[in-house]
Length: 331
Image (cartoon, rainbow, N blue to C red; front, top):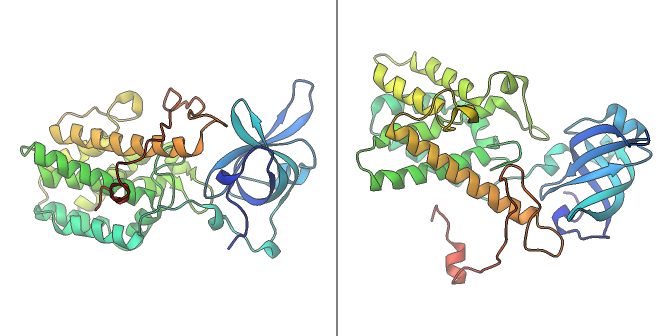
């Protein structure tokens, strides 16, 4: 266990004497031609920009994303955001007894509870073809990878077990939509919710810093998921073609728009319900996390968030009671 303060607790002018994970590293030059090392260093709580102006030769030559470094420096402010001015940096060695796992954020939800919730949804599916398919897909090593993976590299549910947490949120939203709109095919919609992001177990690398794999960059999680599902369907005798096509359509269209990398736009009620449920889960989680980590010093506003296309506000209004604050979507 590391005995060091979390980065998100540090303030301007605080000293930094930490082991941190390299999340980005790049050798750059100033306008005058002097080299400096531009990095993003993080722990479980947050990531900060960190510029190194001297003594970085070994780290620049050997360091890579996912490595752990030992740094000394000072927290300073630049354009409303905190960063680290590094005075010394070195790569961690075995004698330090630290690993990348010490710096990976994890879901706050209990893993066993989430696994039980997920498996319950498989058992509750009343379509035998879909139940058999889901049982085949979410078994053994693949299910463990699914339960371990983050849902994204940095934007939403970007922590260990995040993919499972994100999927369960979508399932609950879809179940609520089925109460409002009973014409929806609930078994199809819930099955689509469970498998739509399955490809992220191969798209992302999450043994150290979260990064895209070569397969993830070249193919993407949507195609990876559809390929896995088609391969598993082939093992089930008599699986209806129309059911297969509608299930694959949900996967292919779940990002909603062609410009968002969906090969097709949603063309069924179930597909549009899944897309909107996915958007709701992802964006609320992302905005919540950004507001927690990106507030400018002395302000209730974050810096401008490129992916949100705006800055975000923390209004600091409390829930009406302590009891309501403890309740979650899963209570």
